[in-house]
Image (tube, rainbow, N blue to C red; front, side, top):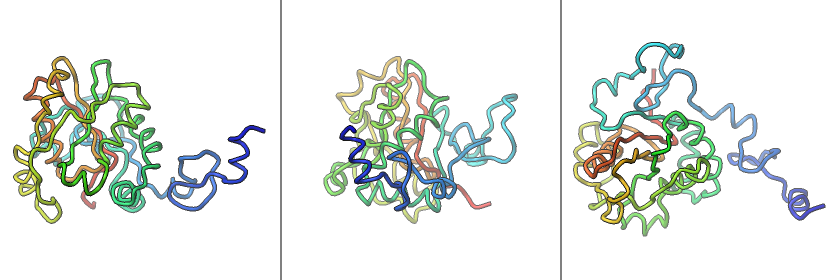
Length: 242
């Protein structure tokens, strides 16, 4: 019996969300899988929020009301799950609970969700943190997710492509317009990263999308620096009730 088999007997793998034992490490048990609001079926082509109806593959790409109202600087977007219930708990565990072990399953989920957005010109890049927040938190959760996605797909990743040049106040409690004003000119392409953008499509990665203000600021920066186009993928998407 090999060492890994012995370790599995002594320390059997358990669900990443509860103590329930599972067959394979870094996964959810059946009950937690059912309780996690993964997004499937018909989705908005620009932000990934679920839409009513079925995807028959015909006609124009479906767009949600928010994306019809707000001019998005990126082309297409997807999200793995809704930011509620167990989905919210998983995101917060990664972001504030130092649960870096969640990056591995999240990378698999992101790879599956982002598959329609990837091509041979894709460069993966995370939404940046301001250096003061990075020092306090010790890691950028978006960068952790971006690197996990790159490991799953084999696409190149530039964790330092973007730079948050000023510390923005929290977005919590701000309305949609306030969120966009708060991020105005806050993100730019790092001087070391500009040479990677011509001829590339950038896939921006973040943990949560609410209004899309942060992703829009990052997409604008990439396009201004010569990126061929920008797409986005997030681990979770805040959606309106009803």
